[in-house]
Amino acid sequence: MYNCGMKKKLTVFISLLIIALFVFWFFYPLRSFAVMGFYSASHEKDSVMKNSGFEINMPTAKEWYPFVMTYNAQGFRKYSGLDADMSIMYNFGAFNLLTRTSLLYDKKSSKYSSFYGAYVVKENDGVFAFDETGNLDIDELSLAVRYDYTKLVIEDFGCEKQTFVLEDYQLKEDVSFAEAEGWTRVDATLSLNGAAHSFDGYKTPYLQYGRPMQEYDTDFEVTKVYGIVYAKYLEEYDCTVMVYVIAPSSSAAQECDEEILKETTIAPLS
Image 1 (tube, rainbow, N blue to C red):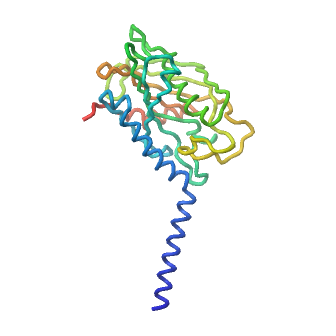
Image 2: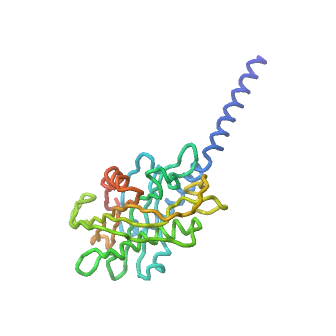
Image 3: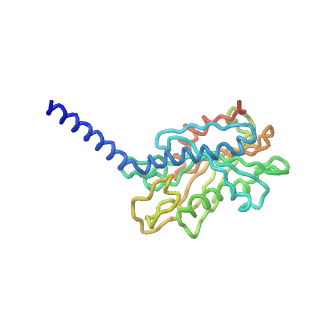
């Protein structure tokens, strides 16, 4: 009886130790999943999509975060100078099990400085990113991407001098996307600050991405990235939707396009 009791206590102790070690090692990703799940759900309830009566369904895939998040960009109105509201859906590189931080920071990864998702903008008395003739306004479209990447990502990491340059782009009009015709596709090359930087004290974004674990000679080094955007004004909802990916190589952007973007659906709320 004594040996049996000791074995049970030892088994419980080992089990608790394993759980404690698991929680300790995976603290950053577990914290991220918990915090961002709650935070995203709260934003989704008052998003432009929700208030306009539709939803955008986007899958995730290998080496990406487990779910797509929603953020209502309240600062976009002041930043843009437009009478417009914007909600952002986004996903980023998954957590590496060894470094316990997002692939967003990993210069060797195809998910370095990568995001995909959707920008949804409702402009009062206007159509965001399209002119009176229905042609794409590349400057306004770029404004949404620039605000998101420079203000909501890089600046929050502590980068004081942000770089965002649209180097080149090509347009394809009347493209079929999300089970509908009439989309405009943009293939672009940009120069911007990469996400890799040395840890220098706690920053709020580390809640979702984890903290950088490597040391770098140059923080936020300017790098070339490739982007794909599908844009369309949805008249039935009075919103412009821009489904996007930015990635460190053309092949990585195309892979995300094939695996994720082209699987996106837009539907009225039931």
